[in-house]
Image (tube, rainbow, N blue to C red):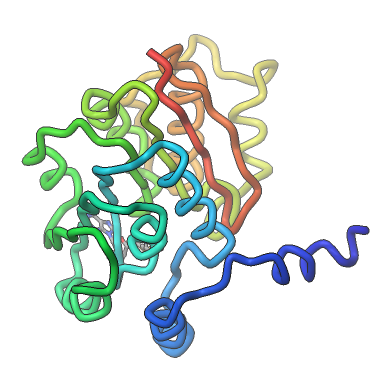
Amino acid sequence: MNEHLDALVDAVGPSHDDCQSAMLDHAVAEGFPTVGADAGGVLRLLARVVGARDVFEFGSGFGYSASWFARGMDAGRVVLTEYDEAELALAREFLDGAYDVAFAFESGDAMATFGRYDGPFDLVLLDHEGARYAPALARVRAKLRPGGVVVADNVAAGPVDTETLVSMLREDDAPDPPTRDASWDVDTTTEGIGAYLDLVRSDPGFETTLLPVGEGLAVSVRVE
Ligand SMILES: C[S@@+](CC[C@H](N)C(=O)[O-])C[C@H]1O[C@@H](n2cnc3c(N)ncnc32)[C@H](O)[C@@H]1O
């Protein structure tokens, strides 16, 4: 079974639409790190099951992940944030008019942009810098509706050292005294992801599951 699993997942899909195929060509040509199709399928699924109307992305690149959210929505808005003006211009080119949702293209720091929106949001994607996920969570929490979902990408691969993460997160090995707050001083991606995962899993307001899809998605539903 296992040797055929990747092929089966690939065969079942989801597949790219025309806009996404063009995006994928661009990502491959430029070596740009998108969430990928498997994780994209999860974003579409989540948008559909929560009935998303308002979505916010921390770190949008040229709009690939936003296109997956859009495919799970019949109406509403996706807010894209991106430091890099050239990527954002490309996102506008790819996405404008391509789906049944509105897009807001916001340049500059994602956290500063988030502060300018009232919310509430149905879905939030963290895909900017791992060291900034934990500080973002407290602000996201305040603007995420009950039943809303926050997804953190890249929690299990890429620059993340999973062995270190496991030792940070195993209850037996947890540092004493507990360091579970958003000000946990971090300077590497692994520590940042560890701080985020520790914060969100110990918050009674969220139920969190890590999906081993793409680079690893931490999916947290706001339950109170
Ligand atoms: C992994 S890529 C995003 C990929 C995108 N979500 C997708 O799947 O297509 C991360 C992006 O976040 C941007 N970024 C990093 N820190 C940021 C910040 N504080 N505010 C806005 N954008 C940021 C980077 O310029 C980069 O383009």
